[in-house]
Length: 228
Image 1 (cartoon, one colour):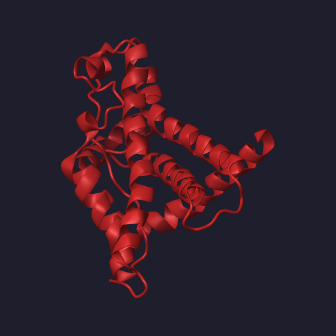
Image 2: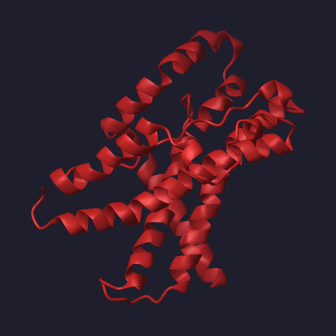
């Protein structure tokens, strides 16, 4: 365990970050299914996925084990912090959408868009809370959780817009790539998760995403200051 870190601190830090991560992932997936439902596809609703109950959305590895390892690593070994996780994908039948080509893009955008809304709400909560609070107080815990929610939702929004299957940005590739690139698209769809994990664990995605997500977070804070 890293110097100066005790078990109670580890548990507190995990709780402060785990709740926003779970909320961000669940709302993200429900948004996909909800927009699909509004656009004519009831598949997610029929599978019981239009619910904020986290249990139907939990993927044992992507929602619990992988984020847990990534959260513990900086606390235990002092390695750089990396936030990554995923839920069970919401089932979408593009053929049922009223205008499949357009609506598929709207469904894909719904997840990152919802994360941006959650980030904005988190920034507003930060603006409403007193600036100074004792480190052991409930207000301090709320501040840390709201700050974590702001960062996590900005990172997830930017991360999911990367053009790599199975991320939401990967759904845009068939519309962006020429037909001659069909073979490349098939390779990306087959090995997309492997490519993604390599990028995450080598820190490549962090170097790309962090500056953008930090800029987005600053924009959210500026927005909150205008209305609070």
